[in-house]
Image (cartoon, one colour):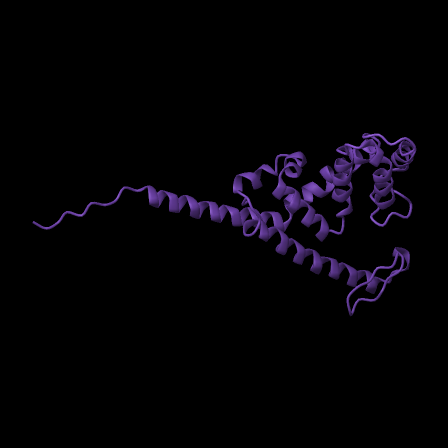
Length: 208
C-alpha cells in the first residue's frame, strides 16, 4: 500500500526499501502530526464536550484501561491519542467487536462479521491489527458459522496489547499530563470561588 505524504515528503513504498533520509522525514512528520492531534483533541475535552470532564473522572483513568474505556471522555481521549500514534486501528477493532456482540438480529451477523474480518484481520485488511497466526486462523474458522463470540479471542488479544503498550504510553503522554494540569487549575479556581461565595457578609457598623 502506498503512503502519501504532504509536499516535501517523498512517496515511500515498502519499509525495506526506505532510505535513511526518507525514514527520518517520516519520523519528523509523525512527531509533528502526532503532537498537533494530541494538543487539539485533548484540550477540547475541557472546553466543548458536554457533560464537562472533571478532574476526578480524569484521574480515574489511571486505575485501569477498563476505567478509561468505560468513560465517554476517556474513550475520546484515548482514541485521539492512538490516532496521533498511528495505531487507531486497535481501538477501532475493539469497538467494532463490542458493537458486533450487541447485534440483536442473527441474520445480520454474517455480513457484519465479514466486514470486520476484511477491515481488520484479513491478509489485505486496510486497518490490519497485530494478532498471531493461530488467533487469525481460529477467527477465520469461526466466520463459517458466525456467533456473538466469534471475535472474542482476537478482541482479547488486542485488549491485552493496548493494556500493556498503548495504555501506559497514554498515561505518560504530554497530552494526558497537560489535561490533568488544566483540570487541576480549573478545579482549584472553582473551589476558591465557592469558598469566597460561602463567606458570610461583613457587617459594617454605621457611624454613630
